[in-house]
Structures are given as C-alpha cells and as structure tokens.
Image 1 (cartoon, chains in turn brown, red):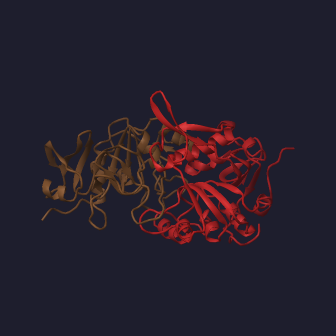
Image 2: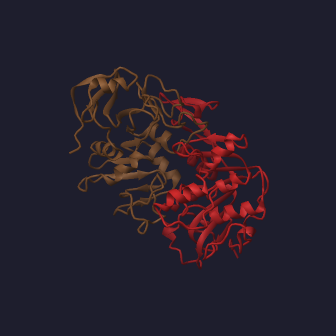
Amino acid sequence: MPGPRLDHYAIALRITREFKEGMLVNLGAGIPTLCSNLIPSDLDILLHSENGMVGYGPVIQDPERADPTLINAGGQPAEYRPGLAIIDHAESFAMVRGGFIDISVLGAYQVSARGDLANTVMPGKQIGSLGGAQDLAFRAKRLIVAMSHTDKGDRPKLVKECSTPITAPACVKLIVTDIAVIEIAPDGPILREHAPGWTVREIQDLTEPQLIVADDFREIDLA
Amino acid sequence: MIDKRVSSFDEAVRDLGDGATLLIGGFAGFAECPSYLVAAVARKEVKGLTIVGNSAGLGQEHMKKRMARLFKCPDDYYPPSFLIERGQVRKGILAFPAAMGSSRSPFEEAYAKGQIELELIGQGSLAERIRTARAGIAGFYTPVGVGTFVAAGKEVREFDGRKYVLERALKGDFSLIRAHRADRYGNLVYRGTTRTFNATMAGASAITIAEVDEIVEAGELVPEHIVTPGVYVQRVVVRPSEPRAWNLPG
C-alpha cells in the first residue's frame, strides 16, 4: 500500500521551495494561493495578482480583519505588505505579457507529456474559464502546476494527450502533485521526487506517459 | 460649467436601451462591483444585452456563502449575473464565466438552456482589447492564445520569428464602473484593488458611468493621485449611504 497523499498545504509548501530571492511570482486561484501563507519571512519576493497588485502578503483568515478593497486573484482578502503597488488590469497584464513574471503557479485539469496545459474547461462541463491563466502560461518565464495526481475518478491527470481544450501548448516546466514532483523535459516527464511511502511503480501506475526516473530520485523534503 | 454629477442611478442609465453592449467593471468581489448601476439596469428591464467583463459573478447565494467565510458581506451586492438571471443578457464576452469546480454559475445555467452566447477570452487580451478601444487603436498582435481555441478564425502573423494573434479593440456603448471618490469633472480615485477592470474600462465606451462612494469639491483630489481623468467619464453618481434594495427606484 502506498503512503497517504499530500494535502494542499504540503503541495503549496513544496512549490514555495522554488521561489528565490527577488523573484516576481504569480499565484493562481486554488492550491497556488495557499503558497502566499507559506513563504519564509526572510525570503524577499514580490507576489503579482491578476487584478492589479504587486507585492501583496498572505491571505487574511479572520473576516473581522478582511479588507474587501485588497483582494488576491482568488478573491480572498490579502494582507498589506510594505512596498505594495496597485495597478489597473491592462497594466497588470502588460506586465504578464511583457515577460516580467519569473514564476507562475497554476492549477490544472490535465497536463500532457510535452507540457501542454489544460485548465480551461473542466472535463464534463460545457464551458470553462480562462481567467488570467492563458496569458500567464504563454508568458511567464517558468510555469509550475499544482494539482492532484489523479481526478475524482482516480484517472491520471498527467496524460499523453490532453482530452480537454488546451490553455497553452508546451508551457509547463514542473508539476507538484499529492504524490510526486515531475519535471517536464524535452525527452519526456522526469520523476524527481515522491511523497513518503510512494514507489516509482505506484506513481507510474497513476500516470499515462512513461516516466523517466531521475538519477537523484528522492523523497519530497518538507522539513 | 462642466458638471458630470447625476442625481440618481435611474437618471444615469436613462438612455441605456435594448441590445446595448455594457463593459461592466469589477473582478471577483463586491467592493469593486458597480452594484447599483447593475441594479438600475435590472429595474429598466432592457433586453438583449451583451456584457463584457472578467466574471459575470458566480451567483448571489453562492458568493454570499463562499464570501461570508472571508468577509463581512453587504446586502447590496448585484453582480452582472443579476442581469443574466433576469433573462436580460444575450451574450457574454468574459474571462471567467464558469465557476471553479463542479458547481454552476448563473452564466453556465443560462448557457445550458441555450439562452446565452459566450465569447471566452483571457483576462490579458480582454483588458488590452478594452484599453485599445479607449486609445483609438484598432487591434493588436499578442503571442497569447496562438495554437489554441482562442485564436480560431483570427489572423496569425509572424514577427521576428514568433507567432502572434490579432485581437480587435472592444468598444462598448456603456462602461459601468465603480470608484471611490470623484469630483464634478469626473476625475476618479480608487481604493486598493477596486481599480482593476474599472479603471481599464473608463473611456472605452461611448458613455462611461462611475458609481462612487463620495463626490468631493473640485480641487480636493490630489492631481497626482487621480487614476482616471474625467475626460473618460460622462456621468458620476453617488452610492446610497445605507444599503438599498435593488428594486427601489433611485
């Protein structure tokens, strides 16, 4: 039996390890926004939000303290942080399209072996939402996907070809799931890390494309 | 004397008729939503509208439930979906029409019944289509969307070895926006993230109407703090000091 699956906070925590001093990072709605509460206090990075904030802080958990005029891309109340800049929507996306975002973290319904991102139309739905994901997926310097490894029917979400419309082709560089960390490389997906108690075989069984096992394949370090 | 103040929301939307294209400001919450302008359009019972914006709203009850965990929610939140639920909207040009997860937004409900058309567009291309409409530019080439359903039927052109898709400017008949303070010239300042699509949409329609918390004397707004110059705004109207039911005239 494999180990338990990582919760959303653990996925978000692993992703924050990719953030480096001075970076401009965009966090999408869902698991990605959890990252804002898990960034080490001594790491000076700027968070960009689609609705026009650069340099915002963690999500405020107490409705009494929440300011509805300071919300993140998920519509959640964000903490003010010294250095915060407010811009309008066109400027916010000039920044995205202009290539200023170092890392974009997005959720996904499916990712293909070559890194196509499908996060627009949820399988089973008639229509979907693009939000800011398409601009980010096309133009961020590095795209990290946070997702559960399988869907509600336990079908793989890392697939050979996406079966739902793609948001952007060949854009995903790293996938952090509840059981593994996988890098999308030119030769195919590389299995880099596993959740505690998960073997290569168990991860491969829940993944459509063949995984290349990294030379330094190891357990995810969340300490 | 230049004076863009109007005395009521009904007066502000007096010439808004059937089939109008409305750029409706806001993003995801109540603070940046021009709720009383939306309510006035609902009272007018105009039909066949095209609405343009980020999200039409995920439904009043849904939002109240979800947002109540995050905020103390006001009773006077009327997102664009208010108009969809009343059958007033023919088409949406939106970035976020569908709810996340398996729940369905009012837009999705109307779409499932075949009552509404959708043009799905990402926030960046949507915002720039609106900005270019104000700026007198016919369109622009963006790398975003090439090779996806968004580029279907649009011109794709190569510049310096990279492919770009042509997106056309998107002008409205009315921009309905929300701001914090205004003066009689229509100059606007915004609080925090309420700037979002509101400032982007100002001036991108034949008529821009701003719903504001307060109108101050000319000269009280600090020139360097003004985000939207009054030239882009035709009418300003003040929100009531206490929440008012949507169906009350005013």
